[in-house]
Image 1 (cartoon, rainbow, N blue to C red):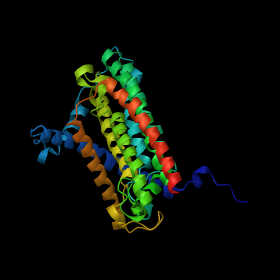
Image 2 (image 1 turned 60 degrees about the vertical axis):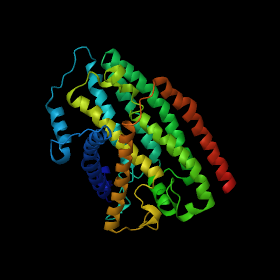
Image 3 (image 1 turned 180 degrees about the vertical axis):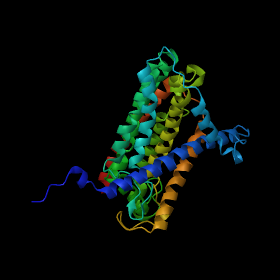
Image 4 (image 1 turned 135 degrees about the vertical axis):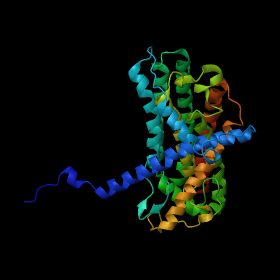
Length: 369
């Protein structure tokens, strides 16, 4: 009688190895270097906007400035003030950085490459997973403010709690019309549908050219505006950087942090900005697909040549980089909101508009069916 297989023997090692390779490449060789390049780009773009030179000494065009910053963070003294609550003080930076990296697991950053889907975890509840994990970031910021045992970090943590919770609701409601239209929560299938029938914001080919496609583009545009603005608030970027605004709170929730613990907050903010840009590109701008259905696979499981897979990956990251530049330009062109304006925009305007947009989408789908 054959011996039953152990759980170790039943593991599909092909899937485990493929997932491990995708994690290492996407997180450590793409996302984290993109964080460093985003910091460099922010400094260069802000310098251009303000008619300054920007970093230009460390490497050609200052490209190695990010390396110099990393070395500086590693070599600085890791000082922990005596008055802080030490365990939570150390835990907070990790709770800020880790969720930002976990959310990239469900982003389809390409179609296929050598027969493998270019997504780490092909979940059927992709957006729900992103919202569930991203909501953990608020705990890191709240803990940082509370554990610092100081008034400025505490006020920054309190602000961040109410701000992020408020705009999470708007962000969640904003994608409901998109889910109603596509009838799916799998991000890979949503991207493939956009590749075949026009992007959510640009329904210019396939079934998107129909009257139904153009009419449904109206609630899609409203969802895009609410989602993008909420993303700025969720990542604490200007004009919504009230939890860490220098003019009132010194540096907000990370006032007492230094060295690599501060660097984790710094990296977490930019990683969240990159993953948020990737999610926005996936939901509204066709993800890895090219305009007008060029090189789009016939079905989601169709075999794709390796060179075509590389083009799809390049298209995805080109869109993400464009969105990151949009984040940067907004930061250096708009003034900061007052806190009452921030909360009023979220609860009085965006919340009601998002609800009305859900009702409008339902009515349009019923009329156009």
